[in-house]
Length: 314
Image (tube, rainbow, N blue to C red; front, side):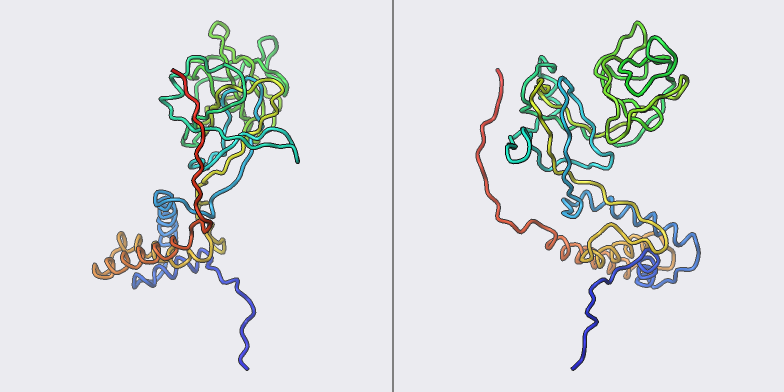
């Protein structure tokens, strides 16, 4: 009796993937430039996939402990959007997940008192780029001494002209949330240190101030004391960048055919010597493979619609 291999671990590393795509174009991978241009096209291809809908393998759960009086909380920089979210109160067997409604920027902007405290019932998701921008500002100190320690909550800068009234700054590798500013002394007040998974540490005077454009949530009301609230979310993240050599891609195995087909089509549009009829055929194959893969990459559980009470004010 014929025997099977007993394994099911087939994958394509970067070299194999690009070589297969070139062969489908009727070309041969020859130079380092060929590899670089193919990797660039591959990154553009996976960015395009984010615009085609939800990729289930990029859904991740996260949790953010909420602090008394804090409005904004950063999300991981590769966050595309949040798919679902709740407020979790309590711990272990006593925990309760409570709905928190998503609102638009327009609705959030009309809330008259954004500092009101209570159990958060609404959230505005601010979908920023995740990039970090430089400023002309530098660190001065804590208002008394030069530089800051890991516990200082007042931060004095050379200028705050480049900063919003509330938001995030980055000093070295630490992300810091500031809810208030004092224009008279160029100070950030009541800062919350070590945000977005970073560690609060000391920093020397003269260090450059960066402004990270972090995706973030803004909750209302702001958490009240003793609430023990945690914001639990399920996010859609970006597909990781294409690597080099033997590195494999951040996709499940069933998407390997569409990845190869898509890369072959992208390459055929920009490489010389590809027959126009082949370009059209590669495009058709790409769309076919996408349809096959995406039909399997979907939630299989039945959908259940549950009515809920909405909170509003006149």
